Each structure stands twice: as structure tokens, then as C-alpha cells.
Image (cartoon, rainbow over all chains, first blue to last red; front, side, top):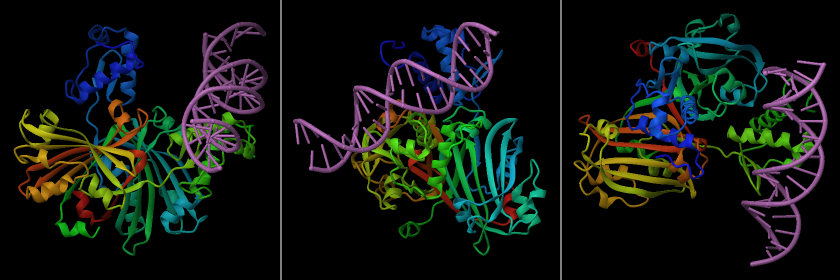
Length: 250
Length: 250
DNA sequence: AGCTATTTGTCCGTATGTATT
DNA sequence: GAATACATACGGACAAATAGC
């Protein structure tokens, strides 16, 4: 069945076959895979080859290996609405998940060019930089980096604790009315610090979501970037389609 | 200049310096970096150190290294509006880009479980499967896979040619009024056929966008998945923020 | 088609510091 | 303490891709 004559390694072939079976519904989310011995016999390869394939698939997030229990197809990904504007805490709580935020870094810094232009302030102006690790069911899920200009949010540093919703602080403590938002989705690869914090391999893909929120005067009042393990979530949106005229002038 | 005495490795320091230079506009998108020898002299380190820093930066997508040519700061990504519902042709044309569609596969198949449930038809019902390669400025950009139930679109196979907008065929030839859409964004890694077609390394991240369009009777009339090289695009959205009550019941 | 210059890709050997055994 | 393995870092040499003439 497997082809040992070409350049593709055996474990890569096994990976592809199992991956295909998962995509095509031979195995469904939550299903237990055959045990390693059975897989060895099924594909006529050694246990080392099977284990390597399974290990890499688990790194890709398709399966989960639990010692003493077996190997299982990963559960469905977290569904996140693209239009949700709250930070992690809000969107995860809305999913009835057990989310926690852990502060990694909290300090006043002078803005660099990127942050200054997003918040429409001068390069060098002071902002609170807040970097937090997000855990879902105690597993690392993502990293949130938010910037708060001190001119808008004096003393905010004292209000920030673990597990707090900065979204609520802005609204309730500082009485700021958010009116519009711009959101940008991209993909980056986890490296160095991020792969360490998120306990994933380097080059694991992360969604990167940049978000700028504006008040009723069109002034930017919030800028944040968050990174979230791409294999754990999917984003969705529902749209009402407008008549043709809408598209013609875009 | 570089500090060899502390815990941070030399190549990591180099990475940070170059990254800062890119963020702060010392090097702009499209610019060529000094060659490796010049960088060695500039920072007084060996070529191995420079190469390691450059290699990791290229993995992060900040720069592109081309043998025989040099090292360049990555171009700006294509901005794509998440709300755009047209396929590739439409959204790329709107960006004044030179996009082309190349048919890879065009055949009538019996639906599998996934497609049948998306289109709300029976497993085994006949659909036209259309797989197309999308090129932007002659570089591969993505792959579009669309399904058209023959019961809704008889003879559609004869209407499909390279570079055609299926969006327009649905609207104009079949007089179908699209009313709502569901769109789902995820990330997958390019493998085998896809990495070959897209001329990228395996495990290069791709946006995966699944889209279902419904008519005024809430009946699904279109299902497609497209994959697009994540390092070439970013998705954005502008939102008007609604009052609190909106969030409370979600 | 050459030919050459430039630049990155790959390999060699060596040395050092830091863990691990 | 000794032996081993590994990552970092340096210097050199040649191969391969690109571009201009």
C-alpha cells in the first residue's frame, strides 16, 4: 500500500492517508483512531513510523494523543464571529468556555511608529502596553497585546488585573463610547517567544487580528493585536446581500 | 554594536535590529536589503549569523530571499474586504489587479457528504465541480473550488470558460437573487497538489474560505471553498458598533 | 549562444560554551 | 571529573541562480 521507493518518507505518506480519512469523514471529530498496533498492521509499517505520523498530526491539531486512552480526532474548532469586537474575554465567555487571561507584561512605554500611527498620536508618546496570555481550558490559546494611551486612560495601570475585560474598563471606567471599528485578519508563524508561550512548534500558523476602535468623533481610542492558534479556531460571518448598486461603487 | 556577552544570541539581536528597521521604515516594502557580506561587515558578525537571522525573518514573512538576486522586504499584502462576496475575479478586479483564472478541473461528480450538507441536497446528487487556479500578475495566488448542483444550473458546464465570473453567471444567466451568505475563515497548510500548484513549500499556510450563498427563500444556491496564500493577503472589515443591548443577547 | 559579476545556497573544518550522561 | 551531545559562531570554498553585456 505504502510506497517505499520514492523520495516521500513513509511517515509522510501515513500522515496524508490519515489526514484524508479525517477530512473525508472516515473518522469524525471525537472518534477514536485504531490503536497503534492496528495501524501498523493496516499499513504494514513499523510502530516508529506510525508514532511519528501521529505525533506530527497531533502537532497540526488534527488529532489528540492521550496516554493510556488512545488517539482521537480533534473536536470541532472554536467558532468566533468576526464581528465580535470585545477582546478575548468577551468572545470566549460568550462561547461558554473557561477562558483565563494571564498578564505577561504590563508597562508604560514610548510608542513606536506602528502604534503611534494606529492611535493617531505622536511617536514617543507614552502608552500602557499590556501583553496577556489567553488560556482556554488551561491550554494556551493566544496572545493579546493592547495599547492604551496614558493621555486617554490615566491610572489605567492600576485597574488592570488578570482576567479583566479591558473592553469594559474603557466603556465603564472611562465612559468612552465606541462607535466604529476596523479589524484586520492575517496569518503569521509562531516564533521564539510566541511558540514558547503558546507551547507550540515554531512556524505554527497563528491568526493575527489587528483591531482599531474609534469613538463617535472618529478618534482612535483602542489599538490591539492578538494572535490565536489557527488550528483551534475558525472565524465566521453572516451577511445580508445588498442589491447590485452597492457593489458598483466599490 | 552587537552584544556577545549576555544570554541573547547574536542572530536574535540581528533579527530584532533588522525587524525594527523594517517597521520603522528604514527599509520599505520592496526594498533590497544590503547583501549578506555587507550585513556581516555592518554588524561585525559572520555570514552564518546573518543568514540565520535572515532565514528566520523570511519565515516570519517580513522578507523574501531570492538566490542570485538578493534579499527584499516583503511587498504590502493585498487588502481584501471580508464582506466581498464575489469570487476571486470580482474581488481582485476591484483592486485593479491583473488576475487570471485557469481551469484545472471541470467535471460532473456525485456529491460527498460535506458538499451535500452545505447545499442541502442528497448525497450522490450530481453537481458540477469546478476547480480553478488563480493567478495575480502571473504569480499563483490561490485555488478556488466551487460546486454547482445541476438541478439548479442545467448546462452550466458549457458556460464555464477561463477567466469567467461564476458570480455573474448565477445572477444573470440563471436569474437567481442572492440574499444571504455565510462565510468561514480558517487556516490550513498547503500539501501535495496545492503546494505544487501554488509553487510554495509544503506547510505554507493558506487561508481557507468556505462560502455558502442563500437565495431569498433561504435555500443554498452556491457553495465554494477557496484557498489563498496567507502571506499575500490580509482581510479587513469595518464595523459600526451597535449599542450594548446588541451584545447582551449573544 | 556565450562570458562575467553579483548574490544566495551548501558544504567543509574549527572552536566555544552549556548542558546531559 | 570525563565523555558526549548540541547549539552557537567564525572563516573559507565552491555550487547554483540571476542579470547584464
